Structure formats: C-alpha cells, structure tokens
Image (cartoon, rainbow, N blue to C red; front, side, top):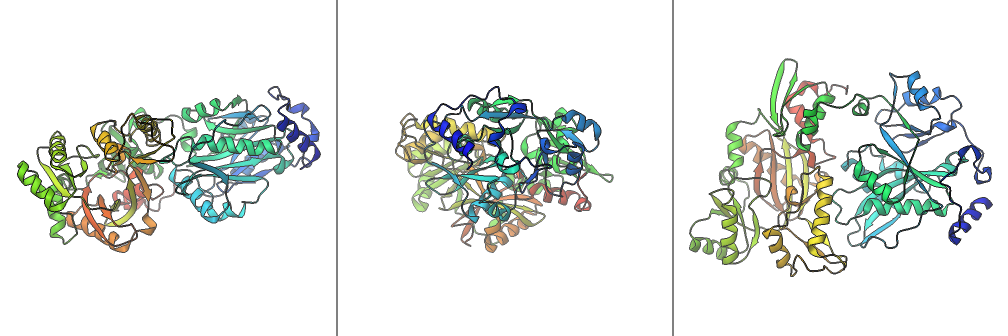
Length: 588
C-alpha cells in the first residue's frame, strides 16, 4: 500500500475523509496513483473483457477490440470520452448499451448497522466456491466464467470475488466480482467497479444482493478507493431501488457493446407487445425459436399459445405442449387416476391409491396406509392438494378442499422422500431437479406471517410472477403442525417449513440434480414417457435421494415448465423435437 493510500485509509478510519461528490477527474490528485497510467487496458473477467475506454488514445481501437470479441464471451467498454462519436463511426458493429451507471462515493459511505442473520459474506476460497459461482450465473441466465478461471484469479489484486454463504447449510447463495481500477491501470480517479452480481433466486434468506454489494464497497473502502461504480439495465427497477437505497448516484457514464445475437434484444428495439405478454414458460421457447430464425406467431399471449413456422411447416404450441402430443396422451396425464393405471400396467413403481368415497372407507384407507396425500384427480399447480393428513377430521377437511377443484378425489399413501421432477423430451432425460417446499428462517423479530410475506415477494420477483406462498388455511395448518402460529415471532435461527407441497406455484424451489441423477430413475422416467406415449412430459417422483435408485412415480405433467430448469437446455431440446433440421443452425 502506498503512503497516499495509507493516508486515505487513516482518514477513513478517523471518519474525516473529504467528500468527493464534486470530484473533478481533470484535477484528480496524481498522488493517488498506484502506478503510472497504462494505455489500451482491457481486464479479462472470464465472461468477457471490461474495456476501459479512458485508457485508449484512439477510440476507434475500442471498436476494433469489441469486434475481436471471443465466441461465447461478452465484452463491455466503459468510460469512453465520446461514446456517441465512436458509435457513429461503426453503427453496424457497436451500440450504446441501454444501461445506467451508478456510483457510490466511498469517502461518505457508512457500513450497515446490522448484518443479515444467517448469512456470511467472504472471499472466495475454494474450487467448490468457484463451481458454485459458475452454477449461479448459469441459473440466472448469465454468461458464466469457467470455474477454473475464477479459481486461478482468487489471489488477483485486480479482480476480487466475494461469495455469500448460508451459515447453517454452507450453500453459496450469491457472488459478486469487483475490479480495482488502480491495480488495473493506475487510475488517476482512484476508482473501482462492481460487476456480475448474482443472488440465488431461491435463496431462503433476504438481502443477499445488498450484503454482497456492501461488503464489496467496504473492501474497496479499506483499500482507499474513492468510489465504486456499477452498470445496471435501465429497466431493472428492483436493482435500481436497492442501489439508490445504498446511496449510489447516477453518473453520465455510458457503455458500448458489440452487435451480436446475444446482445440483439438490446439494440433491435422493442419486441411486439404479444411477446412481452407471454409468460416465462412460453417466452423461453419463443426466444429459442427466434434465435434459430424460426418464425413466431403469437396466437393468444394470455393463454401461452403460439405458432412456430420453418421451411413451410408450422406447429401450434401452448408453452411446452405441442401438436406432437396426442389428445389421448394429454387426457391420460390430465387424469391422475388414469395415469396411475397406465404406469402401473407398465410395471413402474407407484404409491397405493384409491378414490375417496364414504367417510368410513376413507378412514379405513388412512388406518391401513398411515399419513396420506389428498388431491383432486384433475388439476395442476398444486391446487387442492393436502399433504400429511394424519387423522379423520383432517381427512374430511382435505377431501372437501380437493372437491372444490374436481368431483373425483384421490387418497394416496404418503411416501417419504425428496420430491423430484424429471423432464423427458423425445424419450430422453433432459433435466432433473429436486423440488423443496418453502421454508422461512427466524430473525427473532418478525412473525411467521411477515417472514412468509417477505419470502413470497422474493419468489414472485425471481419467478416473473409465477411463484408465491398463499397465506391460506393450508399454510396455517402446516405452521401449526410445526408448533407455531402465523402471528407468532419465529426465534432467530429457527427454520420453518410453511407448506408441505413443493410445487413451484405455491412457493416451492427447484434445485438442479441432472448430473447426479441415478440411472434407475432416468430409465424409469423414459419408460413412463413411453407408456404414456408422450413426447414431452414432466414426471414427478418421490425418491430417497436423486443419486439413489429407490423411488415411486406420483404424477405425469403433459405441460412441464421448461423455464424452471436452467441451466439445462430444455427449450433447445424442445425446439429440436419440433424442427430437427434447425439443430445445427447458427444463431442469427
């Protein structure tokens, strides 16, 4: 650390560092430079390069650098002095990114008074951390740096990786990367920047993104940096609210990117209104089709209906349900009683099941098989399902709830184990994920109801409005089974499962296990798809563990949500099924 940096650090610790809100880069104190200013600087970040435009005497060199972008990487140029002039010089090659730059002045920044309970933010310190960071980027649809790249740069003075870890489980819930501009090129403005912030959309704890942002700011503050910048898309309102809450301010700094298929949505202008109205399950397929040059005609956005056309052939779809699925296969999957019979005849393992009848018969089935699952014979998204029914009174209530959705109600033995969804497309396993019911973690201050409401808001935001936790009788029942009430304060550190079902639409979370799926489970899923004669299906299993063979199959879904299984290529395999000839087409 240079003497000037030590003086800055000392003044920060004393709390009397000068305000830099009116910092003038033309009169930046040269004593803050850690090294002589470098030229033509681009920092490799694994997902692409951050190109520091202010270090290029000839701005056209920035264009040439962007044009040399590697396949599978996404470069970004920032701090160009005349970005509009550079764009005008190469309008077919580069474009102004529709993002805002925000700046946090570190001389005035004050750390949070209290850390997030149950969360540890630390430096990345193992290859497992690097792999977890890579997986999180994939999960959020971001370009991931290779785990080996992350690990190789763990001791870099230019790049810094921080991870947020769940204190109880040790799971990595978020990651952020920082770039030290002084280390990169002797920045006379003494700056730093935040890049590639990601939080697990299914994180059980709130405030992961804020904790990572604060910790990175404090890291650069201790280094004596003057500010920390970040770039955020102009329409990312949730992130902008967070940054402004933390004290970030908009600055007139713009970014340039290369025109390519990945960036195309950023420079071609708004999509037709019908595209915007499609839900995430339809949109993931439409986007993949458009990427291949397949024509898309949205028939009914609200219902998720669209038509894909290529080479004179058209296929009508409703999300992942297409004309290739026969009406017979669809009707069998829609009727849980019928699908149970089909799969049982194929020799597959299923739980014991019967149709709810007279109260005496229902009680006899309960006594014979122990805790039950009660569900309507037809329905989706977990509606009307009650899990872990243990006594006659609860059984009567559960049957009454299920009959609101279907006259035929099924009683099924409750098989303990993990809830596993396996997606089969064209009779091959494409994705597998363990589904877990929603749970909240006590803070010692908030009630169970308040914790559920907060978690539900996070699930809504992370799933584009598809997932939330109903505050209904079933949630109240599950909370009472655990020994609590909705309006009771949950003690700090206590975890509480608030639903018995793991359905995404009622707040459940999905955790990819495709790579560790046991061959017996994969074979059973393919056999089930063939028994139902259905080309696209989501099979629901109960398993001892995804890497063990013990299982039963409980349901088949003829319209599985393909958007729930990133980073697995579900949409790609679906479009491959519809238009095999486009498998090898390059992105347009």
